[in-house]
Image (cartoon, rainbow over all chains, first blue to last red; front, side, top):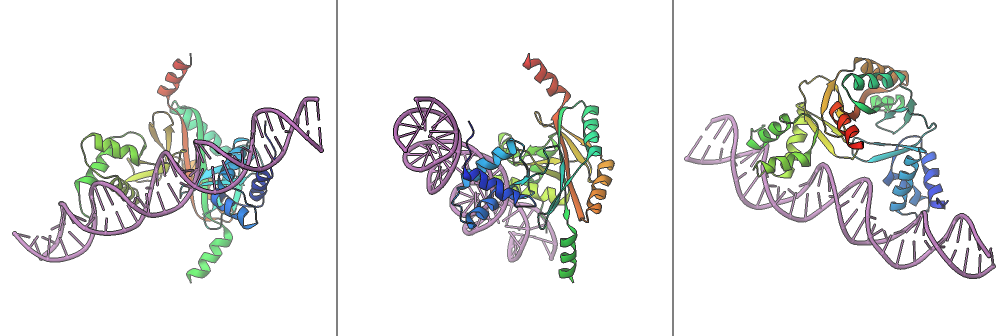
Length: 134
Length: 134
DNA sequence: ACGTGATCGAGAACACTTCTCAAGTAACAC
DNA sequence: GTGTTACTTGAGAAGTGTTCTCGATCACGT
């Protein structure tokens, strides 16, 4: 049986309140700073649950942290992520889907899954970077 | 100044001897089992160097380990990786390259890099899995 | 051969994640 | 409302992978 606890709600809420990917640690300290005495272990558990049930997407940052995000759709999709501010845009990639399947099949691979994420600098951060580089 | 040490050579050699991606830890114990008293820290350093100079590719496994591989080309390319035996096939993905650039540009992103890797079961492992599932 | 500074290695330090287990509490039956 | 029960929580310990520290070592240019 799954129980509804305010902790779980808090995690989901904090995730929803965020536009981009956030690390479990960041989420934990964000919750703490709003006064929630929620435990780190609980945050990890809640996030794993959400990811499990498809309510959240997870990916690994290049630094090795696990990042989570509440996604607007349960469908398979990919992300365009600003490496500076974390802003995330959901993108569809039918072309890539078929390409991945094709390549896998051609090489005799089955059960193909793929990791496709694009990191970059969003328009805002590009402008900021250009200004500060002056 | 860069010095040539047998340790560095050993790491490069061990990497070359391997078809697929290997973790730093695996590489270290492989070297140890051949009698090299090389230190773990050195393996990490050598791998980081190789990755830096483009002599090796690195990626993060879904389990969070850093995997390394000596690649036959310095050109930008992607991988099709067997999640069971580690067999790796290098794949070209011009279509994906342009797609990634396109998507990034359309959303105002600059300096776009992308992570594109396909995990699956190679033909051999598929057969083995099917046989053992019987 | 010599001097110098890059490199090595062992273990400590670190960061992130998962596990443990006693205490707390939501959900259900009555 | 009360009681029961099993799921959930939280603090800290444990685990895992990676990086750092620092004295010792050794490759390279002279």
